[in-house]
Image 1 (cartoon, rainbow, N blue to C red):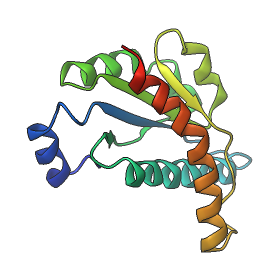
Image 2 (image 1 turned 180 degrees about the vertical axis):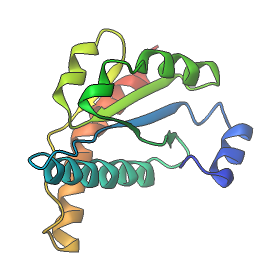
Image 3 (image 1 turned 30 degrees about the horizontal axis):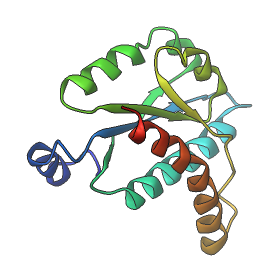
Image 4 (image 1 turned 180 degrees about the horizontal axis):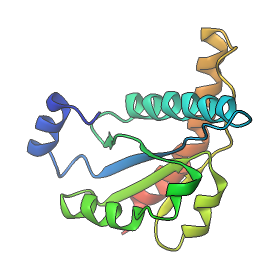
Length: 149
């Protein structure tokens, strides 16, 4: 499910089944040296999280991305965001990112880190295969969260 009116209406009536929120963490680097890598990582992460949403529609909601720059990163409180999402009924809140530095907060939040894969030059079929391969890495993480009591 996406964070849009139609899906949110469904969430409100079926909260007991839609127990997981996925929040993409996107690093925005606008420097001359970093803008291409940043945009490539963003494209990868948004494609992957949309693909995850398609596979688990009705079980999870893909939240809008949490975007930041290096200068604003320290002021972000993803722990508070996690608490807010749990208050409305999400039992599991997972943050997914290509920025390895978020893994240092793994005691506070559930972070899935994946290295960025440049999708921009791939044809459609290769891109789909890459996303399927990445999904295979995420499924065990989701499964372990869902089976925890």
